[in-house]
Amino acid sequence: MAKHRGKGIAAIEYPTGMNQNGDPSQCWIKVKPDGRIDVFAGTADIGNGSKTIQAQIVAETIGVPYDWITYDNSNTDSSPVCTGTFASRATFVAGKAAEKAALQVKAKILEIAGKELEIDPADLEIIDGEVVAKGAPQTRMSISDVAAAATWGHGELITGTGAQLKPYAAIVDPETGRVDSPPHSAISYAACAAEVEVDDETGEVRVLRLQQCYDVGRAINPTQVEGQIEGGAMMGLGLGVLENCYPYYPSVEHRGGAFGSYLAPGMEEMPQIDTILIENPSQDGPYGAKGIGEMANNPQPPAIAAAVYDAIGVWITELPITPERVLRALEEKAAGKHEPRREGKKVVFDEELSVNTVSSGGIRFEVPA
Amino acid sequence: MNIVVNGTAHAIESGPLTPLLDVLREELEITGPKAGCHQGGCGACTVLVDGEPRRSCLLPVAYADGAEITTVEGLGTPESLAPIQQAFVHHYAAQCGFCTSGMLLAAQAYLDGGGTDDPEAIQEALGGHVCRCTGYAKIVDAVAAAARGESFDLTQTAVGKYTTVTTGGAT
Ligand code: FES
Ligand code: FES
Image (cartoon, rainbow over all chains, first blue to last red; front, side, top):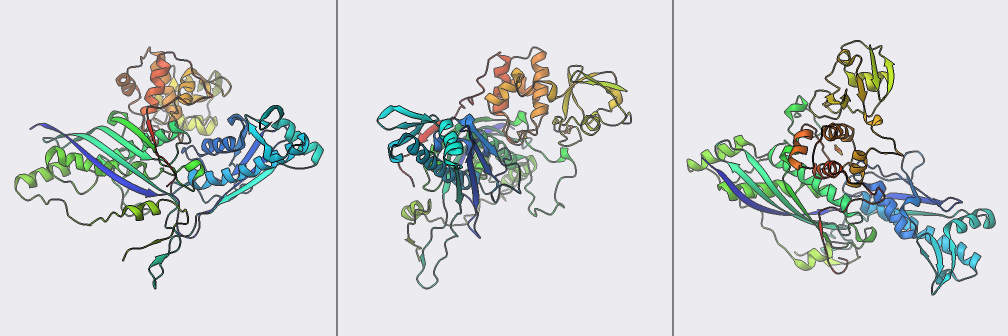
């Protein structure tokens, strides 16, 4: 009777946003007479940080300090459409709508400033909330003054709209086998290495360490995305060793009867968590960002299962990996009855196909026969 | 019955066995304490009763008669956050925020009791609090930073522990 250590690894890929039936997000921005900026969008921030991210995108795109932005998603009636916070899409789709709207606002600011300064807008840029003539930085005008001029002098509202709609999913032409639209807008990749300790007397699996690597495209807010990954790690740990994924959701018949009968991981289960962010930019996301919301809790269960195999030589093929399942598998192994892992699917990796699939750059490719 | 909540005295009309949580949320409309499970299992309803962290969902209000209660509303104000709140903001220790008021009050009691930045002691003190979003790491970081008496720049989020690898072009 002893404790055994093991290590395992799992790698996953995950698409961003919905492919069927469209998936729009819209954004509307207006500049107040004092130059401060109101952003209206419908994206619900459920703790994923989308309010912060979209405000960052708008501030960066226009060229103003972050705290000039007021982000208003409070009212469904008056907000532009956003299909919601799901499918890892809030940054990737709604963030892109915000970027497009901000580009229009920037162009309008430069147009009004050009009239005021009598300079071609193409020769102006915005730095830290001020319109500055390229190559002649002493010629400048604050955005507050531009907005005031628009309001009181030109009779204009500086405003911009943006919308993002992910293309429809690829349809394979049955005659030719060709695909004329790309299947996904962006695919993220992730890997997780798990280290576990298995007690062969009690069957208990303790996760000691999760080292995780996520391709986030572009970490617009690195600490936030790390928080999302750390949270996903704990949820994935729970799915690996504690929690039942009820298979017939949304039927409630399978749910636990009391709070205490559903084992969500607590602080005491927290392993060492290390995070590596890979910035492998997408073509379509704002500033190259991809979405990793949902995939954040996917690679841990298989990595933990592989680590358990490494530790005690049995594959547990049903989640969660409870003490009972571990002990049963060890008993079966001792009796020579333990079934090895099914050698199921054959995976074909085609590098060119894979690379073409990761973003909708309008690349055409043949689906292999 | 009378209770003092965040320095204000209230005469209570609810029955003596009404959970303190319901008195706070329904009768007094103080909604910082959250009803996560209403069974004593999650910690979201935690408030300080005479300085001690208590699960208000399990505490009949009669037991709090005459007590001083602190909810998250009494910890700091938006203009002047308590140090532990600043630590949570700076360390990005809240995502959805549902567990946060309970975490903050448990952490405040831990700090008031002379708690240190030892991660194991922090886990011990906050261990019964469930958070579904953060994975706890940044909460422990925030409490440790507050225990060290650090001051926080709230215009910046703390840099995390991640490493970043950047590839060449767009794919
Ligand atoms: S609501 Fe009181 S412990 Fe969950
Ligand atoms: S921040 Fe969402 S439950 Fe803790």
